[in-house]
Length: 261
Image: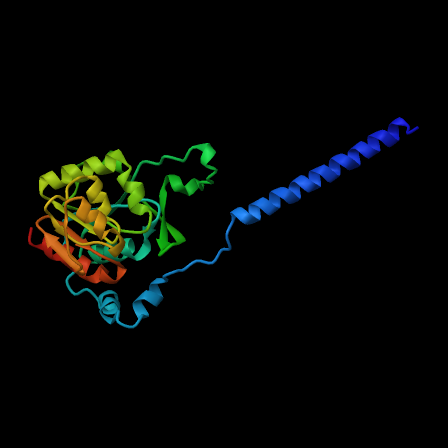
């Protein structure tokens, strides 16, 4: 008959084996739930040096001659996590080169519920995350939040694209109200790539001419827009473009609109 120590030892071994089996099972499941980390990226240097983008490269590397064209103008950039890097940094650089004051405006920080299982870095309270195509790349500090601004603060607003930045923006009530109020004022609203879907959510596209990233053009039509596949479309106070390769045309169109005011 086994003594007490033998019984306890056998129980511990059995428990350990069961625990190891459970761990192996969980690892096996996790390996099936996760996918290998292979993603497409769009480094800025590669974009500027790609064949056919010579004009885009020249736009950034040709020094700005008159740095007072937009002096006194104030531009708000509405952006959230997942903005396409060069669609924000490119126009921001250019408008500041022309003398404009540019503020980056983000939705008020609203962490996801704990049950979503997301890990949010501390800097997310003061910064928003950039992407290159679908790859997170870096962070940029925002100046104000959407609940802190009003129409009279700015002469123009522009929205960069990105695969999920517009989804974050179009769900924010402060962002949508600001765009609607800004549109009623007749001031300039500019959006590039995926960003025009934010204007669709604000319900300001009915009968308006515009363009956008190819995948969302049907959404813009469903929102009542008159869509064409052009690098840039200007309709009254709305300027839109399709893609990072249109950043130069987009930025110059914004410059031209504001310089006349």
